[in-house]
Image (tube, rainbow, N blue to C red; front, side, top):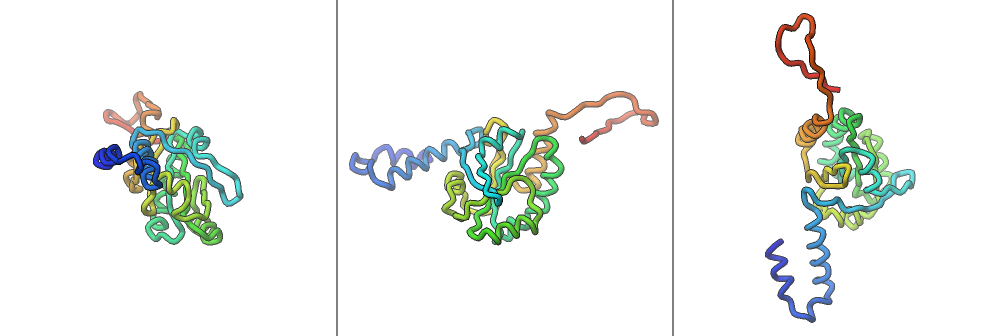
Length: 196
């Protein structure tokens, strides 16, 4: 990005009003925002019931939100679904939510995939595929892609595998867990871990 920035700053006056220059500056601003620790850009989209969902409103309700970009036609997306469902069910009581953003164009295909894969969490689609404002804003180049966001809207991680996501959530939710100590009859020494 430094390389791009240097060249953008030396362009002549007549170049500053072109579509390409403005587009590159917008992209530069997004790239600064789309980083770990950066504020997750907001967007709105609709559920299958035509309910409008605003990302920032959903993120504030949960300790951790996975923004999952996927599509019914993506084999890799569909293969991830069972593991993602397990992770969701394990951590939803600890403040975890999934917001699925589909890149589908066909409502019937999207709804069938949500049902067949028993997708959990909030499922959104605006049927604009790669032209979707959310896809453009998050610079999604392939599916599946994801962004893990905290309650304050800060980006924690990008493109975690399901294994990495499970480990990260275990770490993140451990800090807000419980500690139980004391003697347990029949056990002389050792450590017992209780997952709630």
